[in-house]
Length: 245
Length: 245
DNA sequence: CGCCTATTTGATAGCCGTCAACCGGAGTGG
DNA sequence: CCACTCCGGTTGACGGCTATCAAATAGGCG
Image (cartoon, rainbow over all chains, first blue to last red; front, side):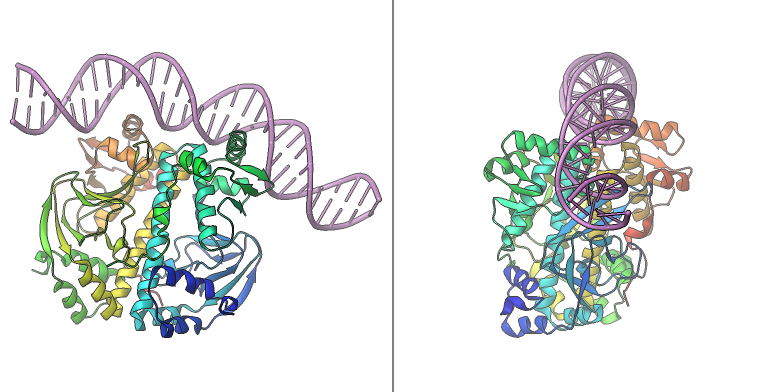
């Protein structure tokens, strides 16, 4: 029932990290929005443009990217159902990155004015939004460590660990199994590698028995071992009830 | 006069991006804090620890870092005087990165409770804090592009451009000149390079006439050319009056 | 003066990028 | 139904950028 509301899973992730009473929860669920579908690679926001309404992913996957002037792409984040896509920019007048659909998606578009008003009027909800921003920033920092200081094998393994951990936390998959919604080229654009090398690296992980592949579906027979070689610890994802004292 | 208040430059950067009236400005200046000095490499916050009071840099430089389990370090951000160091974590119960002094610094330590109370009671100030978080996140995303998709030469040039642009915006240096407060090893830890290669790269920039070095003091005879090869555009820093509509 | 750290330079190795070709499945149109 | 096309995935050969190892220089400080 509650799970059928398009914003239910966003609310769920807010409540997991910040205490919200019933009235506040209902205010979030009462936010105005319009549901819209997007095809793969459709833009939900453009780098340099004035931000539009804030999209919340109802189903499907999306990513944020930046382009270098030589055309090379860096995917800076990937988003799973239930996540807000553009909270990063509710108060900025220009986008600093683009947001694109990775798969077919359905998104609830919330007018920025309403979100801004909510943040002004409701301190607890404002806190929840700040926590959301802080967790996203934490994931970005871990992404920098991944890009700057890890080998290709570690990067790919780490991405798999992070993605499956987030999917598991959102109750969207098992911990030892997930379906990566990206092409190998997109994985490369996320990890600072070429698609060719991503391919070789996935194969190496498979030869080592750390993953089993079937198309883009991955099974991890030994999650502990995979996390060890990836140097993955999930603290930076700030799962669970993390309200500070 | 106002510039002598330890929080004056933080307030200044808030006001540059978010409209705050005089009452609100005075509330910020009335925040309780204790001034403290730190020696280079002293910790202001530790990865995994419960966050303490929030430090605001009054003088000197600081950085945030994460460690991989093999001991290699990734510096994820560098901070200049006037910046808040740990707003990222005011609402989180565990730090996800460490904060260390880069040089001798003086910091105003603000109790987290007071900051949290401020954010709850003052919507405009809460907005200013959110904008601060969003700008920091934007810098992290550009950092990911730098790490993932740029050559060593571009990375070093880009870092110089970013640092000098931020120092210039804070009115702490000229646009074509700055003093990098980091060792070459720390620059490497920021850019995903070794100190040896940073050294060679700095030399290459100097041979190309893009920088002139005197110890750690840099002069950029041709800022435009340096920015071009760095692929640096300052929009991601969200300078100026950026309050969204 | 002597120690320690930061910088500089050289030689070598290796990870990953580049280029190129081929494969395989899905969709399309004849 | 089958040929064609296209995109994503796979594999091999080769090269280059950057790491690694090593050593020498320079500067700061007791």
